[in-house]
Amino acid sequence: MANRITTFLQESKQELMRVNWPTKDETKRYTLFVIAFSIAFALFLGIIDYGFLNALEYFIQ
Image (cartoon, one colour):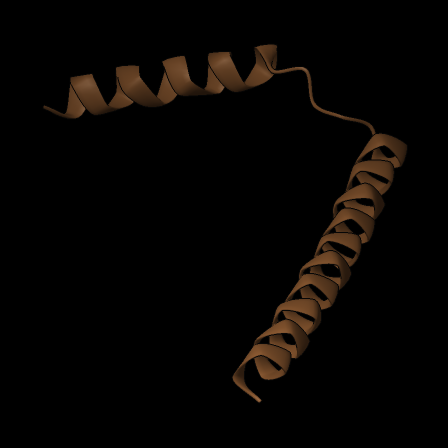
């Protein structure tokens, strides 16, 4: 059992060495993109929600 765990850990380490990790600048850029996209999408949904609310109030009255 211990041999299988050791083998697994060694193979996992080898795989992690093959991973093409993003650079620090790429990580910053991707993070800023995700934040900007999330804010833009939240604003879009807020505007849609506000429009539906006003339309509903118009039809109810």
